[in-house]
Length: 200
Ligand code: ADP
Ligand code: TYD
Image (cartoon, rainbow, N blue to C red; front, side):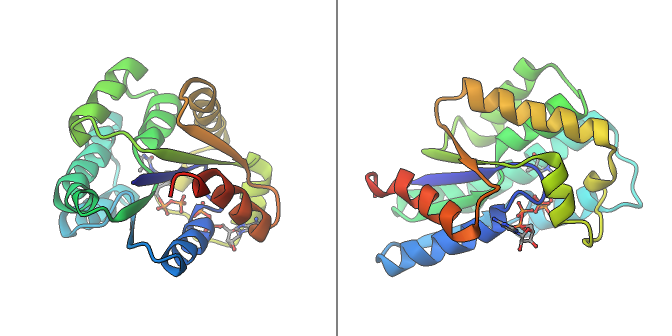
């Protein structure tokens, strides 16, 4: 089973993923978590480039680098684990490319990005996508003391478009489960687990 988490920076993905992982392990499942971009030597090296504030990266190059990091992760780690019936949880997946590079940067037409996403993953589709929905103001409040990487230095209008991108995906992709991320950490965890429980 492939479970992905999406949402703007600071929406609580890492927090919820570690709680979910713990819960699934307690129930006797094998679980592996990867963050995107990252998770393999090649993908972590690409991550270093993508988040380095000293680099200026062309928007199309940026999109292809995120996709390259992803194709390596899927081929090297995710597919083999899924074949062994391990539950794989991804901290971001190709929906982030639609939201950030498609809506945020307007790098390419959205339809073309869907095609690149399918090519990079050989048509892998998550079983569940949890969209942690949080306002931009609340996310900014939660992360105000964090150091900003290259992506996070983009302006407010960029983040508004990213948010709209996720909202559009939530309305159009049936696999998206929208979770109110303004609630307390434990309540959100329970809501996520409730969605999954019947399928485990
Ligand atoms: P993401 O991985 O989506 O960037 P994090 O899980 O790192 O988000 O959370 C960002 C910050 O918000 C962290 O300091 C975390 O402790 C805090 N946080 C996470 N969930 C909540 C919540 N439900 N309510 C308040 N603060 C939260
Ligand atoms: P990270 O620190 O992992 O995310 P978060 O702030 O949510 O904890 O940084 C990854 C950054 O890369 C984040 O700003 C989102 C961005 N990103 C894209 O622009 N496109 C993508 O396809 C992915 C996977 C991430």
